[in-house]
Structure formats: structure tokens, C-alpha cells
Image: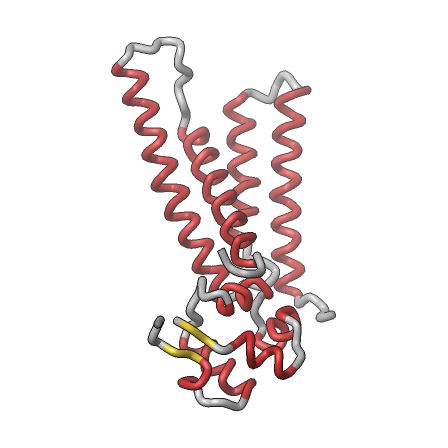
Length: 130
Length: 65
């Protein structure tokens, strides 16, 4: 088993910090009144960015290709979905529909990108193709 | 693009993980190449050819038929 390099250890630390940020955001929102949704979404976005953009343990060409593709689809698809959300809200005068902030948008698009990346990685690892 | 990676790996009795370690890529990447989901870049293809001591053309076939 290879000993992780200093860079790999640093990347692992960044991912761990990202996970901690998510945990702090969730716990803060649930149990601390000072944690507004605005603050929570900011902290969550910071955590998700660390998870998404920190290099993987083995950051080979395929990983980079899948990550770029996931970011492309995540952000394009997410922004399209958010645009539709706004249009539908205005078209039907849905006053009770919550307004989405920039951090909400970033949160959703980043979650989509992360899910896509890990799904495609899992599919790459499946034996027998498909 | 078709390739003989799985066949060459079997001859050497290497697992996907072992081959991945030798090429400094992930196991998922090796599986993706073997199952045709991914065509490696030229540097990686040359690395594979060098590892198996065979010309690239005998490992990778651009004709998909």
C-alpha cells in the first residue's frame, strides 16, 4: 500500500473540512437560532465546494474528465431548473413560492454536480460494463 | 475503441487494482477502459504499451466493428 504524499494528505484534509462544514451547517440550522438559512446555505456551499473541487485520492485523467462533465451538467442543468422555477412562480403568481437566493442556487447546482460525479465514478467501476 | 487490455492483464495475472497502481491511475479508470466506456489519452496509451511491451496498435483498435 502506497504512503499518501503530502499533497494527498492535504487534499484529504480539505475534503474532511468540507464534510465538517456540512455537519456544522446542519447542526447549526437545527439547533441554534442564530443560524439563519442564509448563513446555513453559505456554510453548506463552502463545504460542498471543498468536497467538489479538492482533488480526488487518485486524480487521473478520467477523474478530471468526469468531474468537469459533472460540473458542466450540474451547473447548466441546475441553472435551467432554477430558471424554470422562477418562470413558473411568476407565470402562475405563486406568492407562497419561496424566493431562492444565490447561495440556494449554488447549493442546488453543486449538489447535482457532486451526485453526478460520484454516480458516474461508480458506474465506471462496475464490472461487466453498462 | 476496442482494446485488449483485459486480455493482456489476464496473461500477467494482474488484478485491475494492480494494473491501476502500475499505471498510476484508479481502478475505476482501468475498468472504464476495459469496458470501452473510456478511451485513454495518448500519454496513458503509450504508458500502457510500454508496460506490456507491445506496440499501441496491437493493444488498441480504432475500428469499433
